[in-house]
Image (cartoon, rainbow, N blue to C red):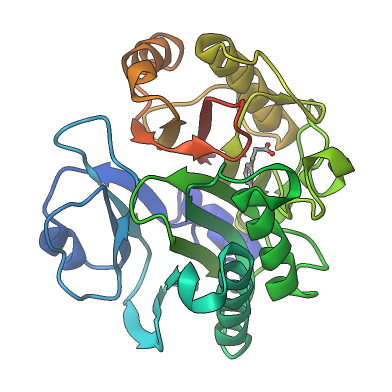
Length: 330
Ligand code: 3EB
């Protein structure tokens, strides 16, 4: 008596994808629900207590009141701390999060190196060894010139901290600049017991093959990750990058149009049905607050009914004004 996604579970033996959704409940209410792996508040929301599953993402939402993001899995959830690292596991999934003060680690590169080394060390002893999706939120991401731009230093440190961790293939990822404490680096991830399938975008050069002009260390991420049961696609931060070049400099609406073309190409490349639906939670990171109403209006027109959370965030190339990421369920 199995139907829908559950039949995929039986076929592959892999756990059903976490259900990611935006919810208007209080954090404590969500954390008390069965199978709650993690709950995210945006900006500086009220207390979610000291539960390791409660995450304050340092990006201001453009909607008030902003919803919380909930990750829910099948089965009981355990959680704990490992030094500064917080984790939760259940249903074959692992959530882990770490916030560092760059000043304690010699700057952006050192902090990224330590963050990735600690996450790697922690995950080494876990059943859930396969990192599928990572989020990185860095302060003042575009500050500094050339190879000394803070995002590029982050890329250097990330690669050092990873070592050969992702030699077999990169996870999907997002790297966005926040406007909270400038020295705060936040990294969190989703891992599972089985490998996913990395998906690249035929319209875009793979990030790890970007030419030298974008930095000493190419960013290590896949454009998307199909989860092991093939029931959900985790979509990396997607900007108006075509080939390896930034498109439509200075034109937010045109960049958004290009992003939607990139997303369509990515879904096709993943073998996913075209378009997004009411089950597909997306985020739009908008550099200039003045652009937020226009971005919201365009997204409502182009993606009607799709839950999109608008956040104030800086894309890692200063000429890029908007970026989308999120999930597409099969
Ligand atoms: C891009 O396409 C935009 O460094 O982990 C998107 C997603 C971007 C992830 C990362 C960077 C990262 O190159 C930037």
